[in-house]
Image (cartoon, rainbow, N blue to C red):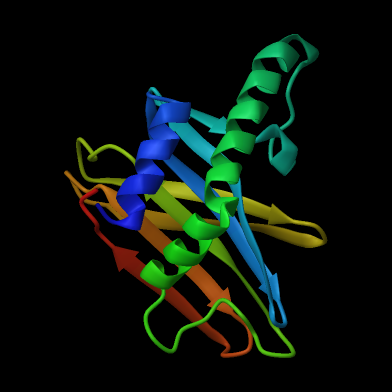
Length: 170
């Protein structure tokens, strides 16, 4: 089983009804800052990470959201494990492509992990907000039966938008 299979298994242990999860990634200079879970679809319901500041919630939803926030923290901790993060980065970036922008620049993007095979062709749109910047929506086209990950990122050092697709049967 590859690294993606191990990661998906870990996610499904945290939340067995997880359809997909999106992570923001970023880095500056030589420092890759890692992955942060920002949105998930759990049992056909889209849930935003309340700590991501992309959605505001009513006070009555606080208890539910605290448990969802804990769930997002657990997803983050899976990818922040050094053995998983390093292996994942190695598996999703081809030779010569880096998240780092040596000594200058920055990278940012979205990693979308599809945990169960898609039941139909669809488009998943993830909107990420950054402090001081307007929102940006990234659209991922998913084919029926797809299970794996999709990555879209920009490395400003190369002034190049790169979208990478990997389909790995865990």
